[in-house]
Image (tube, rainbow, N blue to C red; front, side):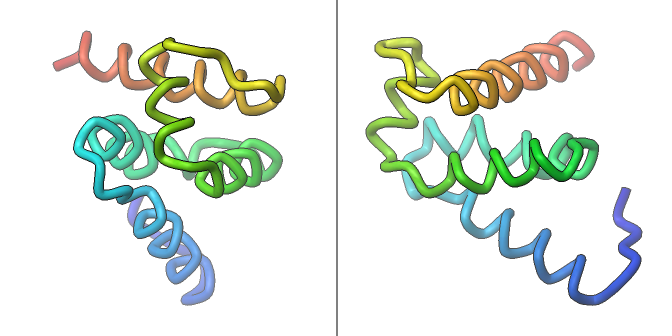
Length: 94
């Protein structure tokens, strides 16, 4: 899944990887594997939603992924669940 149609596509993917690195270990362990293994499998709308998720504050993301509180936006709730499900599936395959 490392093949890209254009240099622009590769640059955009690298930018998303970079923004997935949050500097908070708990978030890095959730986001970086997801973006590397699953992001490119998402449709364009879901990719846009993931990029929108990355604009949220680290503390919000932390609370959402640890289910301390739900996101207030239905799309973000869906993306959080998608990420958690992908990570669970990957862990079961390991």
